[in-house]
Image (cartoon, helix red, strand yellow):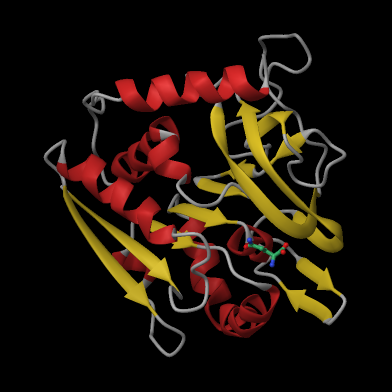
Length: 257
Ligand code: GLN
């Protein structure tokens, strides 16, 4: 079985080494005996979403996001069909903001893709920090680094599983919900105590840089969803993540307890 990863606009949305996230997805597929292909799309390229299993939209400065956002309007419908068909997406930082309705900056409004019910407003100071998240659906905390001026607000009333003290989930699979509860750091807007989104098979997050190498459990979440959509019915073979798990524990101890 082959998984094709589409990297959108790597020449513009490429802050903090998004290619490392692609490399991580690719290798965790190859190590398990799957085929993996990476296709890069630049601004002038036609994207056939029906060929893709995972789409990566990376981070960018406000200036680069502005250039990309116009182009995104022309692929909006195809992108939406792909998401509604269960296509997997990893959208980081600037890419995450562009999934929403808009991103308001001092230089004007950037129209978003309207794929996820969220919006972003530029604020000050920039929110720069190490960050640790908790989501009880993931076996380990999610660790990373954030650096954003934008404050993102979720349109619906977000529910973080576990936050209410009840083990009952108050969301259905496919609903928009936060990626995690913030244990350390700022998160979406420094107020709500949550970070990012999970929606359909989208992971949207401010955690940039080596998000997936640091969090192989998040990488496998994306891979599993993409493989299931292709008809894979087994369990992902476990890989030796001992070093990653140890690093995760050290970060938890350093920043949380
Ligand atoms: N330009 C956006 C912001 O500052 C996103 C930054 C990023 O992708 N790191 O909020």
